[in-house]
Image 1: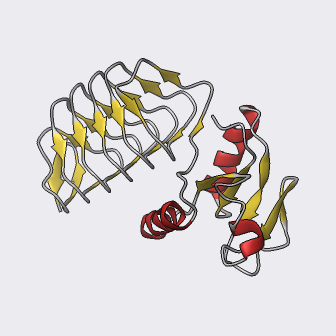
Image 2 (image 1 turned 180 degrees about the vertical axis):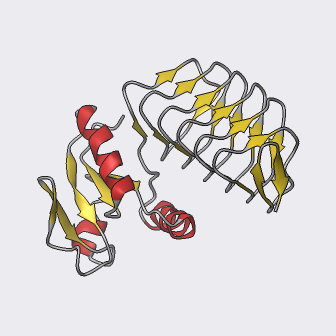
Length: 211
């Protein structure tokens, strides 16, 4: 966890969850940035919405005197913003990891990661940059989660499963071990996945079938 104050980009329910986790980890939140004019100048709790991402006054602090977490809900906008920060500000987003999450000795734990309360991260897992793991998720031994994937609350991912880049797994899903969920695919909420999912496909149901 960073020792710098943090700017959170985005004002939405996810951003509020991120702020809560940072605060209970004793990280100072400098403020929010959001490009919606209606949100600027307001406060979330006691945290100000400082302005938008076009204002150099705040943008130039990122990577210099402030860390950053991108909490945009749209995954395409979130990825684009993170890539802009990495290129322009020469820095990577901080992690927001709930102190109640149980994290074993993982193979890799990178940058810009969100891990919600009560999640269990087993040994030999790999979590790549900018992954979102909701509350109550279980990653069994040897699971690999690639960049920009999102795992919904209450999901269980079995031993040795691989979740490729830009995958969305809906809440309460189960993915049997040793499977591969292909790049850019979507697993509907509550699904039970018992076979590999090809890249770019949507699956749903118990057992999950391609839609």
